[in-house]
Image 1: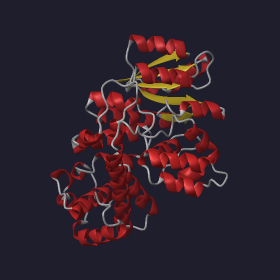
Image 2: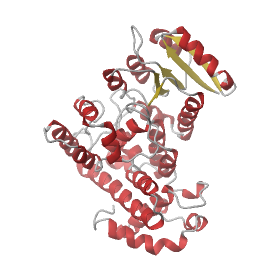
Image 3: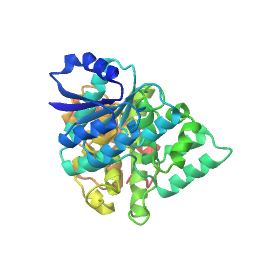
Image 4: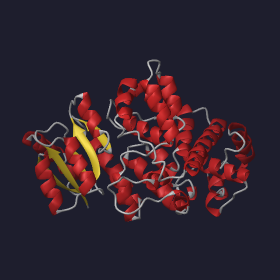
Length: 392
């Protein structure tokens, strides 16, 4: 049974939460702490799977509490459950919080958010990777792209279009932006995330202070990670995403599905990227370059799906990242973003001449969803969409 800790400085709010969640007492063990200091006392005595905190509290606010949780209890899911917050308070919690919910929050919304987060925790098997990934507050980006983003935002001529174009080339920047719009950090959560639309919704007034803080968008350490290898991985993710979108556009006129297919392919290696340069306070050395590539494909997929689920991205994208190498484990009976991402990766590997068992097409899966006869058309669209040399 999962253990949940609710934190608020107002006893009446805690009592209301207790009453509202009474029907879930057979699903969860729940504790209620009045303020950050009491929460840390409870955490020191016993482990909790999820910590949900108000933001505006005297003494220790929600951001400070969650920063302590990151440092001391990294395995816990961290959720802000707060009413109206000033802009600076929200900016402060963007790093340590996995998700943000606004009060009043319907019990079913709260339940579904917690269940999804707990499901993510159950998904990952390697506990060392789980502790590392739970500490991740951002996925570092290519140093050159990060510098380009900072320069663009500092320019008087900065535009949403140019910032979106930059974000669309870097999985680290894109993943963080998608986290912000998939939760309620800066408005109502978006169920159909799109990088360009996300930048538009957030606005430059929000993105600029986040970027300039150097806490939310951060570059990889040039001395720790081989730049050539990193560029290859980013290019490969972009190629797979582009090919997956091209396949989806052959099969459906649903723009949202095609967009999800792109994101599933584009973000398919975020787990690897997060493990390359883990947070400074995590235990153990980072998993650099070729060592990261040597991680089992299932481990890389598991890590990426875990992190994206923690960050609140939709299940259909999380599932596509998790099962890209083993789509037969899904319950799919029709074309989905998983089908597009799986096929795109396999087809591009064929084109590069590097066919591995883990990246081979699952013909049985494609037959089950009624797409086995579509492979020639898919190959043609993939090769037309992805420039030569960008396959691997």
